[in-house]
Image (cartoon, rainbow, N blue to C red; front, top):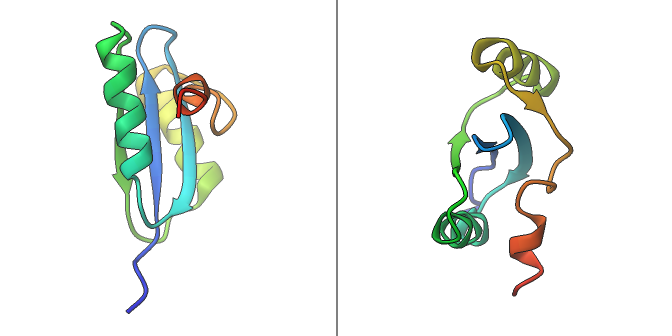
Length: 84
């Protein structure tokens, strides 16, 4: 059976930014990167968004609801992936 896909929201409270990653079916690597970033003292967190969502509407909603700036996918945690 194929794994269900979802989007991942990555939030950086230090910089008041967020990115939308995916769609993906496994976020283990992302969660590991968040834990490493948190261990370095960064205020990073992530969570999945399941179901049919309009990507642009989702970005607008997070921007306005949380006063966050949307940044390109991968840009918040890219340095953590380079450590692999």
